Amino acid sequence: MIPIVMGRLKHLTLPKAFGTRWSLVRAQVGPLKGKQNASPFLIYKLFDLAFTYILYSKTLDRFYTGACHLDELEGRIEKHNTAVYGTHRFTARANDWELFLSFKCVDYSHSVRLERKIKSMKSSRYIGNLKKYPELRDKILKETQSN
Image (cartoon, rainbow, N blue to C red; front, side):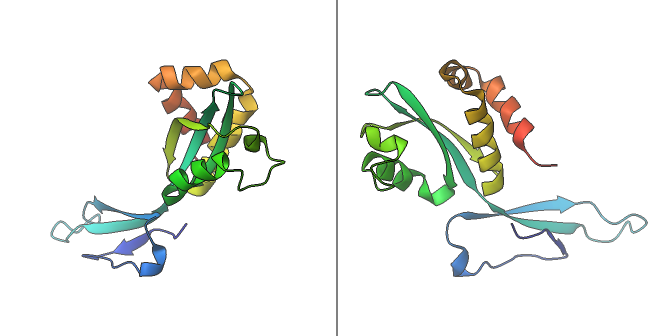
């Protein structure tokens, strides 16, 4: 992730190399202490948006949890269904994987932490409860965010 850039910036142009997976967030912060007439500072931060996703297969009656960058989610599901990752992989056992639930994360490392947390629960009932109860989703997102 690119660090926060502080200053009196009015706009920031991103290079095309960043593509669609990057999101620019602009937040206005009040004037500096002791300077009432100073214009507020602007903070720009680049987030590498990502997803943690949970797939469900009716054939296997099983869930699969994974993480990917924002622009890769649809392609990732298609790859799981066509065994692109190899015939020895878990998702190659079925070709009817559907998106059951997804979480939008601030960056890829957060999505991986969330994926590992969900996998550590080892429970299809827990995954069902994640879909059923929004407060449980909010709780697990907060637990896995870095400080």
